[in-house]
Image (cartoon, rainbow, N blue to C red; front, side, top):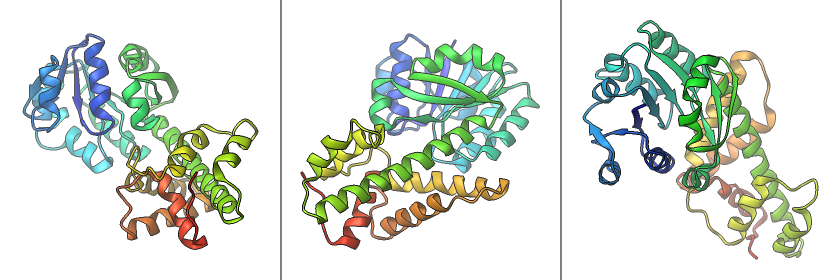
Length: 293
């Protein structure tokens, strides 16, 4: 199967690279600044999403948010204008579930299938090819595309019909955001109380407080490394989708709303491009202490 890939950012570039390494014929948009390095590695290029779609059996999108995905899929010279019946669009962006359902409906009118397949794991897992992918869509379409998705991932799980993938991702982003906030609170408390954060981390990581988030973020926080694996701005976007969806279905999310406001405060302080581990800096500012080893 020939695969098209649109969105060669921090996550998309290594994901597309794994497809090439696995031997899939790959087409990318030539207007992307990272396209030349993939073309040099064996990919071909197309000028528009329409042109790309006309060459491919599967088209993967990995874009910032719903408006960008909608423009590439349904806009002028979009995927919908070039894709043949039977083509599959796999949107691996993290967007609003309702947007996925709306696009899938319009694509289905042209005989084009769609999966919403957002990912978790950030840049390190994208580079390793060990992302966790949560997928919404019809079972037969999922089965047909499973091997392609698995090329980029350690875990690929179908969680329901179209939109279910993004609902699952919203749940994931709630847990990650609140977990980072909890880790930040704990390490700031330890620092202010005069206990070495590194020793606190080593003491608790094997117990019930241990988590993937703790192991991923505590060392970076203590080393003062806030270069973006996943930017504050992007987590704000995800939590905005979380809260919008929660209001639609009638689910109060008080903890999520609180962390959202913390992230908004960091953005106002000019830290929107920093990693979401920068949540610790919100607490450090309040407590007038810095978490270091």
